[in-house]
Length: 187
Image (tube, rainbow, N blue to C red; front, top):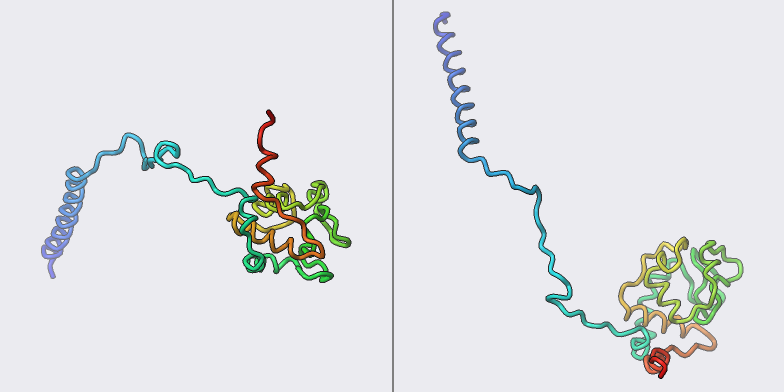
């Protein structure tokens, strides 16, 4: 191979590379999209009141009227990893829940409650249990309970009915009829 043939090969390679680069530059000029005035995607959110009407969920008192102890026992299986439900079974990670409805808050002997739970005070009424199991961290900030909560009011009503049945003398659950006179304004 002569020097002249090597120059022809090198020239052909350079010409091919120059042609490829030229095609790339030309295609970028011809097909470059316009940059948006505002980068990103705009997400259209409809106003809640404008298009949809929110259906009022029944209150917890209304749900107590149809609450099922059997369904509550099924829902309570989520709690069984940390709590005992049998009388005298003792605490696990969480305190024993036998007889919890009507019991004083943070009152199980021998269980180490968090400072936040001790400071809560009061009694475990059905309404207090409902507020707590909806979102424990929000109801008692600083609680050691790691459970995220039960978002469905029906599940909460069923589990409260189940917990109420775990007692020698179950408490009457509040009803919507009993709550209505309390909520009615005085004349």
